[in-house]
Image (cartoon, rainbow, N blue to C red; front, side):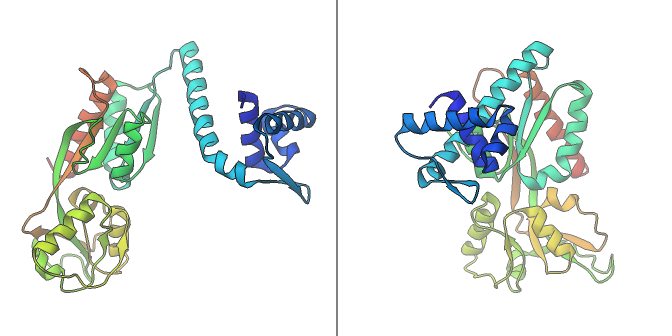
Length: 298
C-alpha cells in the first residue's frame, strides 16, 4: 500500500464516511473514493462495505487497522521531527512513567527539569512497569520510570530512589492512631485493597504472603497504587501501596504505617543502552531523584 492509501484508509476508519475522510484529509470526496478503490485493487480484497450511508470495515480492514495506526503514529513522529528541524525544536524528551509516580513526583521533577531546559518539548505517557519496559525496548521513549527491577536485556537501569510498602487506612478522626508500623501477618487477617499480582510490586507482595504461608482475605484488587490509595481515602478499607504514592495523599484522615518486616520498593529509570545518555535524559533522572527524595523528606 502507498502512503496515500494508508492515509485514506486511516481517515475512513476514523470517520466512517467518505465525506468525513475528505474533510479530515482536506481533499475532495472523489479523490478519497478513487484512492480507496485503488488500494482495494492492489490488495485484492474489499476494505469497506456500505451500510446506510456509512462505510463498515471488513474483517480484513479490522485486522490491518492496528498496524496502520502504528504506521500513522510513526509518520506523525517523522513530521514532528521534520518541523522541529526547521524551527530548531527537534528534540522532544519522551517520558514513560508508572501512573502513581505521575501524580506528584513527576510534576516536581518536571519543575526542576524546566529550570535547566525551559524550552524543550516534553511528551509524557503513563504505563505500567512492564509496559514501560516494552515501550522503551521499541524505542518509544527516551527514559522510563518504573517500580522494581524489570531486567530487560535491551535496556540500562539506574536506581532513582528506594522506598517501602506501607499500610494506609482512613481513620474516623485524624491522629487517633499513633502506631507507625504494622506486621504483614496482621494485615492479611482482614480484607484489604491490594495491587494486582501482574504488577511487579503486587507480585512482590504475593511472594511475601506465600513465604508466610498465609492466604489473604478477599478484598479489592486494582492495577495502580494511586487507585488503591484513593479507595482507602474513601473508606473502602485499608490498602497496601508504596511509600511514594502514600506521600501524595491530601487526606488528613489517611494514616500511614510501615509494614514489617520492611519490604523495600525501588524506583528505577530505564534508559536505552549506550556509552553516554543524552544530557536531557541525565537531567530528568537527576530531577526524579530529587523529587522522590523530597517526597520522603530527604
